[in-house]
Amino acid sequence: MNAFITYMFLGISLSAPIGPINAAQLDKGARFGFTHAWLIGLGAMCADLLYMLLIYFGLAHFLSTPFMKTFLWMFGCFVLIYTGIDTLKNVKQPPATSSSEIQSSVSSFRSGFIMALTNPLNILFWLGIYGSILAESVQSYGLIQVLWHSSGIFAGILMWDIVMATLASSFHKFGNRTTLQTISGIAGLSLIGFGIYFGYQAFRQLTD
Image (cartoon, rainbow, N blue to C red; front, side, top):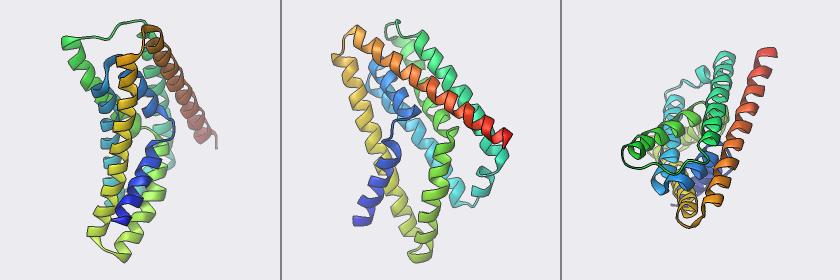
């Protein structure tokens, strides 16, 4: 159990730093409530699971090729800047309802999945930290322990997802219109800022 808790805190430490996912969760939660913020995180967690499986099945070398890293930096740049601009455009719009809200639920999950999938910083975590955990666990304990440690990481990610969704939805419930617009504006600018950073990294990959 101690090992599970240790890896759960590792999952929290992966999710806690302010990044594109947290910014998107704050925006969606403030405008639409808990479910949409939670779906952003759930989509990101599904992308994390995909990377974990790729590393487990020995495909880590494909993710670390210069072409793949450059592609992800560039595509991540496009996704983040597009999402940030779209967020800023919708700052003054009231939350949608009925069929538009259902469509937004799907959009929330998809946005989280794509942002996490195209975030090379995620790849660095899974290749570096999880790769070493996988190697040590397989060598020392076997497959069951690998699954136990991995479950701890995902429990931590899920816990942080719920915390962020709860925090974001509190703004939706108790914040006034100005507060919600401010949060969405900051989130949009943050996403654009991360997109510019991703674009800079892609440029460095191309010129190195």
